[in-house]
Image (tube, rainbow, N blue to C red; front, top):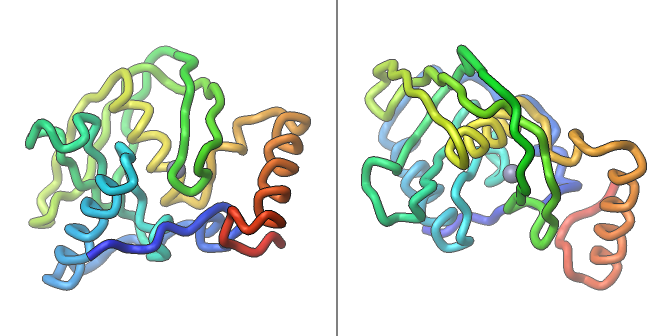
Length: 174
Ligand SMILES: [Zn+2]
């Protein structure tokens, strides 16, 4: 089942998600829906707060469904190590049509629980590292425009307000 992706302006995106304490069938079904929603929206990552579930959970697939091993679910993730810095363009399913460059660590080590509640650790670089860091921000209530300078952030804000007025951004601005 496809879920509704909330857009910037919805307070759920600025609230830190709760730790997940119970991985049951309902959650596993919800995660399946998150993957379906992410693939349909042509995204490479989707965090639970983006589909209005305020929990520490995200899914990702930098191969867009082409490679099974890239289909990753991270529950209660922790970034345990970061190395280097790299600037690259980034987008977000909660900010459709808005892209800009963000500086982030280049190589990271992540530890999380899988669907069976087992802890796993992996290293990621390139797009996968960027994706993990972006989604990990979401579950901590942070969105990518927070990396912009105040001036650039204001410009993005203006663009969004225009789109809300035009009926092209289905959320309220507070
Ligand atoms: Zn995002």
